[in-house]
Image (cartoon, rainbow, N blue to C red; front, side):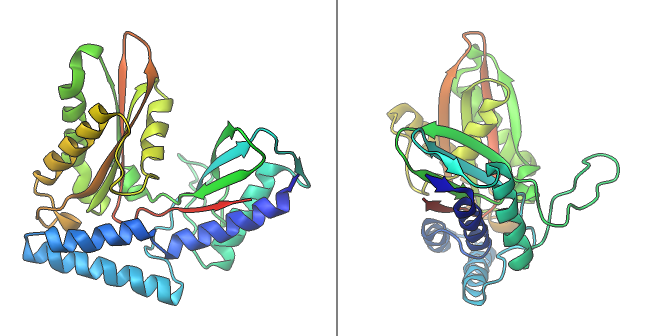
Length: 279
């Protein structure tokens, strides 16, 4: 039995942590990128990004002024029973407390087209829930800024487009708007499923540890090919030119219709923010 107040409290902790602390693998990747970058300006920028992250962690202040929409991934054990207030209202209360108590900038507007009035507390959360075996609950808070989200894409390719079509779609996405997404980037690619699930595959790909490879060797090779070719674009740190445009590329795939091949590209800035907790 899990009380929804426990969920509320964990949601608050995770979003506050994600806003001020990069995961260790991301900080490590930035340090390695500084060693690999050949452009003097690029090396200087990477050094400043690492310094910015360390100041944010030490002072408990946001890494970036864009504190993102509150995206939450939930893995709920099939044996879990919840008690207390409604689960979704508890999640929103956790988000509200994180953004208000943590002095995080509120980024959410209620009406996307006309009034665009800020909700004042960054609710409602965007929740992706899956059921897994067991009696536990896993939460991943992933506040996502709009600069990199705006640079993302979805292409409904045909099966005959093959690997070259996938590569072309990813490279065109990065080349078109990658400089606006605060590189060096983490690039999530989702292949397959359908119109709505391919982007979710791409967003989940951003949660993988940097340096990890897809267990399918064909897709692992594709990740490395894409990483090489993205870095060959020369966009570089902060878009000022250089050899490190992306820290890593992660590809996820799912079964799809025999007549299609959706390809989603979800870019994330160098601050690939997420924090994980369990109950």
